[in-house]
Image (cartoon, rainbow, N blue to C red; front, top):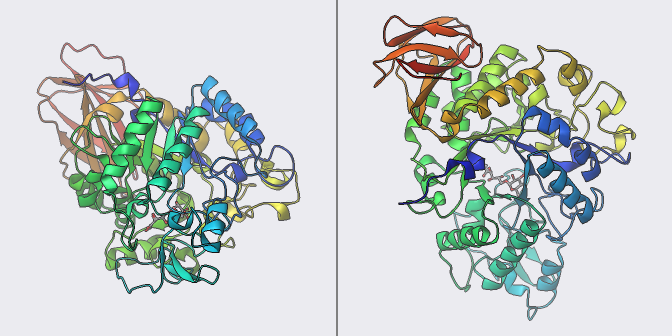
Length: 555
Ligand code: ISL
């Protein structure tokens, strides 16, 4: 029997905040965000109630994929700061009760990485087999480009090497060969290095690609899940609280295997791409059924594991798990203009503009996110309702600088905006209309709403630790689910339609329910019978903690 101490599982009751150091705050006035700037804003993040930061890549890079093309896994890009400042950041965050996890991008390196330069220059190089080479690429339908339109095939010819190398992403990102034990050793060394500097885990980039060994000619094979298990036990030996959070965009029937065996011995957390995509379908249809169905398909996760839930991230809003017709519905509702679409499968937009700036609908979507099974992950700027800039290239549209104020440069930087890594968002969702400074002063702002939502979420352990199930209702537009934990029950209800409605919730096993406490709206309502008749406004949302007879509850 395992020891079931929930207090160790910090990742289950937390709120993760993802940011790119480069676009968060420029501390030295050169136009580029940096570690010094971010460290200054640690109190802002702690004040909001964030429990963990996820830093997008900050490593030395030629920056052809926004830092996901790395030339040194053991450093900090000179534009962003130094290793010393990195440690200072981690220490400051820890002092304010926040952990830091970092992007681990080891599916590939930059072409400019010294390993690749050595590999291509000499067939006898010790690094030659760190990459995947073939003389003549075979037509393999399982090896498809990830960025159609921007990338052509997955094999590129290197004139120096006189061979083709594999690249699952852009051609300037050659794939590392994890079938090579020396590569796996080096990845462990990288993990060990950052753990030693104080990080509490990793967001592992592109996990299925990292494990995909098809096309690795003549290389010793390794069982990909054996490899994830080795990585997990290595991390756990080095640092008990560290987690592995994987970017795993696969359909529901393949998700479970990434958590490992029955007790969970591979990834601690997996991003829930399947539920995320169905949320957009439900929003487009104003009908909760797609989310209900997606939830019903989710595999149960082991005790030490958890979903990571999100509405938007730094990439395109990928809709690759929807059918062609479903994707067309979401495109029509939220991104009809071809310039909003990307790679034929996604939208390069943020949520508020997609919802036409309807703040009630935006809040409903985030209330849902925070109540769903899993740990919510926010992308910087979501807390103030930032929008995108379609004039920026590809996915950079959603990676515009953080909007701190309505000053020139949005309070992000005092430098000439032409030096910014990504141009600011303009217009209705630009810094004049949407910024932190104004929202701090306004008690009704989205920022202050988020602060209350995060506080409430952290005070509602049923959501993070509990067993969840769908509650049947008579309204298609309403999603109702409950979470039971340690003798208490929370029911969350979300109305996807602009029409107000009344729903009846019959709660199994709760014949002695006498009242409910409204966790977001406040107040207690006594019940005459063990069923809840609930009113929900258009795009309304309510979280209710159920009170049983003779039960003492601190709402
Ligand atoms: O296949 C996908 C979409 O349908 C993606 O979700 C895929 O997993 C993703 O594009 C991988 O992304 C990650 O690695 C890329 C980088 O450009 C992205 O920003 C990062 O999130 C290459 O490192």
